[in-house]
Length: 316
Image (cartoon, rainbow, N blue to C red; front, side, top):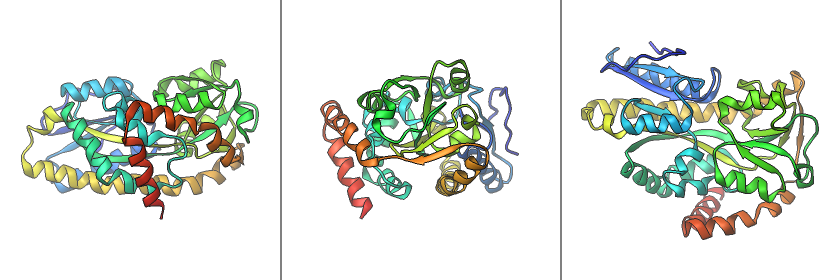
């Protein structure tokens, strides 16, 4: 049985704890639940999965530490904190690198994704999958955002991702990182005027009730790396590793499919629930953030032109 609980006891030998900051209804949580259902069925009940959602086992950084130490088996994490471990991962978050989700998947599942997975293994993590965290949109408490001028001076929450902070700084905003679990309270208190997230995250966390103006900026792609503890993984038999990986592969396409469909379905739901949704001047946003590529190529080196070339090839 897939269990989700506010408190999670130490894992037994046949119980896999998978932690995420997503809330119930979020594709990261439903994907983890699907993984658990598939694994339990495949193992005849030998393996169960305990889905610890809503950051009950800590924020992304804390879960990464738990996985590295082997006190948690798997985390559905975020690319910002993981890129602090392997900086090359930051390149996937460059503004307007991808125009659609399948384009991003092709690059993630190719040689560049494999290279980053190898770097993470050296740090004590096994990449089981690259899940989606969607194309991201900008929301505001009180006004529509259509051009970069509408963002100048805006106090906006970002994830713990330096490339995202740099992009919004280039747009003239005042960005600051904050854990996702703390975001609703920060918006309610007025610390931030807005935030940016995919529609699935906005809807499942009811952020549209706090920031009803939603600009379909599609300014950044974000993945959710699924990382297993290498300490734990190396104790498993080859049969168990294969069984877990097979269940995760199937859950990956479920997660990706939910994100792909959700952008179409949620737009109408959000409007029905009182949100105001508008398009943006994409070319103006691209021009305003172009300098981010130059600064990150100086930091990361050839991964930036490599990922640009791979994204262009995947778009054809």
